[in-house]
Length: 129
Figure 1 (spheres, rainbow, N blue to C red):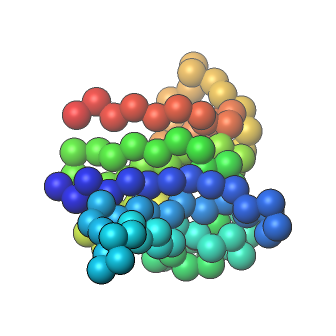
Figure 2 (cartoon, rainbow, N blue to C red; figure 1 turned 60 degrees about the vertical axis):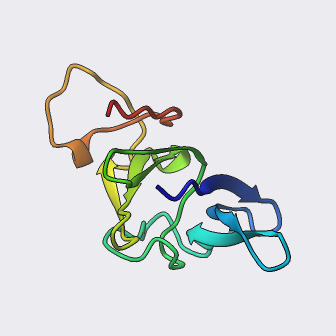
């Protein structure tokens, strides 16, 4: 286990959301390393980055406020404003949509594929390992 810390943040200057990884290991100067992990804020909601590297510009997140890790080490992110739950695969850092079509609505009476489900600003995640 790596014991890294992941931070979701918002940049007021570029009006973008991103996720940074804080290494659990100190560098030569006894400092923690903060590095980009998901998105650099220059993508768009029309190209959400599914299938690409999470760090790439087109891996666009908006309102990524909640993160958790599943039993495989994959990171799940609540992409609140894009009405999706996203996954970053630990093995290759690719990003994909787990659930959500991007449309805002919520109806528990429907039965449809996960990527077709409409969410309304998903805010909290919990993985039952």
